[in-house]
Length: 230
Image (tube, rainbow, N blue to C red; front, side):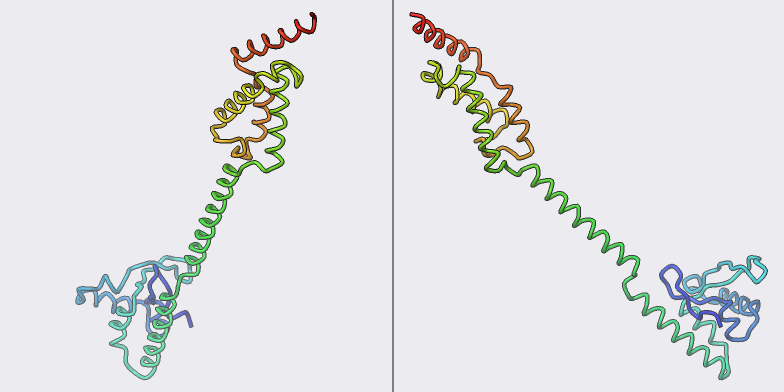
């Protein structure tokens, strides 16, 4: 016995072939019965749907799909105990299939779950990217920047024992940190984003006092050298 009720386009339906086989009728006669209903029932197209299915030789043959209302209307004319038994079986099959249709579609549920999972992953990735972009340098990196900066400024002043270092050291350091914070657009060097740490080291390596400060450094250190010569 074939399946009494099937799912088609999210609707429980049976076919004229199923009805013919289970009620012991010729398929041709069942088709004729359906088409007689077509002449008298104004809502025929809401209950019956013409289609095709291959016969045992693979040749296409016309069939009708019908929902619960269509089956009920068609089966009214089937009488006898056997016919009543099959009517009850069809009703039960329709009930089962329609109950299944009320349950969440597994494929749809899986897709929805996968979509939510993907959205959560995107959120996590976005949060990780935000943290990477905004994470500040750690204490060890702060210390290295500070030490490298001090070394660079002292070198620019001519060393710790130079007159320029003693007279305008604070001015040179002030200029360096002003340039550093301006370049990286931060209020203090400890706010430097971690991802720009290597760039900061390169900045320190490339830094030099501006022209006015360089000239002042040169003048002071030249004076020191002249005193030593005297």
